[in-house]
Length: 133
Image (cartoon, rainbow, N blue to C red; front, side):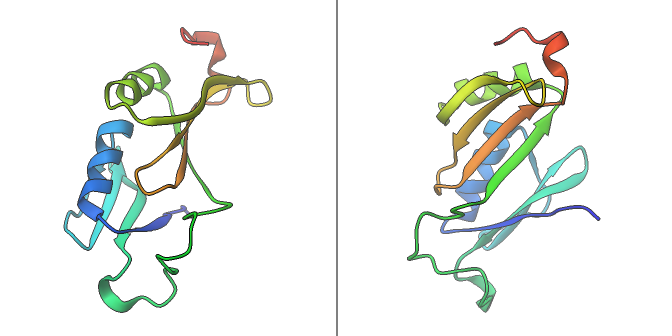
């Protein structure tokens, strides 16, 4: 089984562009109502317009914060490159980069343009090759 989280947003194209620029993902579908974001040929996130296709269980766009209690967690073997993209795109950093001693890796906590919390983490045990604290 593979997780394929879906987030509901007001602007699919802008949200997709943010994830592509900040996380280095690629669009696998494209469009104003729905996109699939890919990493190395595998879908890792779906982005869906709140109002498209009359899905009654996407939630209510008037209730905020979006995703309260859910964190979109991405693991990468290229943490230093991810930090460069985060900085270059002036992504909103909530915390970090920091060291998580329990996982022995680095992570940075972000907020996407819709209010969802996003974490980019190095692979478990990546501190042996870390250049950024």
